Length: 279
Image (cartoon, rainbow, N blue to C red; front, side, top):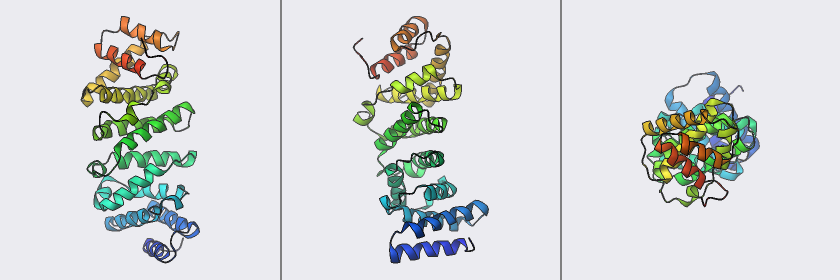
């Protein structure tokens, strides 16, 4: 607590270079950087140096199993400008770290979702050819499914992260990508039908619209996606919810909705549910 941020960085280098990764020394130093950055303003060059040193620590991969310290510190340090200033190899290390982690504690998920979104939607990352964006999109969708299915406390964080990731990153992957095309969206549709939070339901629709546009090769603009999302929400307001069965919803939309795009969308939803799709 009585050391300067420069001393923290020197100590981090010393321990990593001479002793390798040892959690009892590295984690407190990384957390110390978080405390100092949180409480004071430092020159930009020093902040970029801090980010590089923390990335050096997390580059030890599976050895850094405790995620609270790096998540907190990285959240303090990362912004678009600094992501542009670090090296390509450092960006790759950061991408690998975020894709490899499977955080579950309520105390770290919000930081993870924030980091995941901030990094993979940044211009610095999007300009990189070495990031597996199929894995990025797949992981974002899986976290949305997990938070919705499990009634997670960070459901809204996951949904907003999912919308942001898909809006920026789907263009980076092949339209024949099997990982994405094999996903089934039952839980997202069921949440749309049963959820009461309007903001969350709109995010759920936005995710479905992004994947619909991608998988049907429609190349919709962001304005077109936004308009379709609004039309779908409006159509669902007219549904009485006497049944959440997909067949009843499909019938209602096909007979009551004037928008051909909404009708195409509900057809696609039916084809991407886990049940019988041979209608």
